[in-house]
Length: 347
Image (tube, rainbow, N blue to C red; front, side):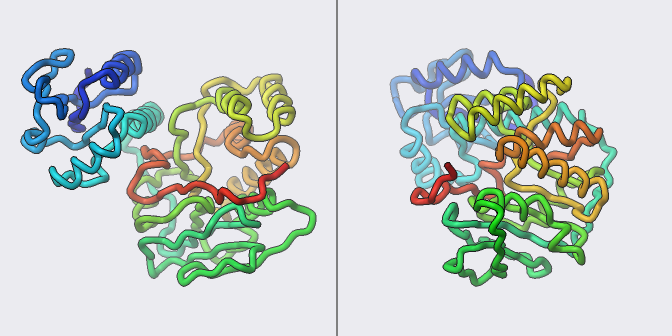
């Protein structure tokens, strides 16, 4: 295994750990420094797991580990043990699935930038707007856990029941659009609503803000006028389309036609994939406005699954958005929540 500054202890040395070990060996994006395995089974203490010593839980704090990855089926019990008995902060505890996603996005980030120090943060963070949209009953509005007093927080909605102590509620209506596309319109066209602001940060309605997003922009903003999260397990729109079809997400015929057309025009495989739940933009930038309008046309023409069309629009404009090195599902700034289970789903 490759060496890095990230030191990992795995908790669980049984059958699940054997499955995990095979994935660690087979995937190119696992490059951390592995220290030891731990287990609650006293009979395993002092033995080896693939040349790594199996240590008792009470010794884990002696090894200066950065992360603890649970490789057992008893995930919740071990998390409680690590936090309650051993004093490990929750943000340093990962399931293997979370760890896998984290390693993958860091690998994508390193592959993109190759340790490049050519960084010139293009975002003006002294005047930024943070906004979201919740239409119909698709999501609940989540209050930010930390508020930057220098930013304004706006939620666009057509739901008169939504209230907030932090978000400024702006009611919208467009009888020509369903709830899904109305939210997409707000998402794609911040320049129509925030001309006086230079930087906007879009947050999907299912996501809760946990920390100061200006800190996120300052840390990961580079040279491009758009910053987003990389997809946590894929880098190809064709694979994404296949996953949507397999999981019955979106409209099958729309997605099939869309992907067929993209393939016919010569769009390459493995050309990048992004999580569009958080988008930082210089929204008044002419290139950004053009990309957003072409993106909207793709949504009108094909599937509303905007992850599929965004990379294609960027490719057409010879544009590559910047990315961070974070998993959108586990990071210090954002926490996605499930959609409203009682929502009315688009037909």
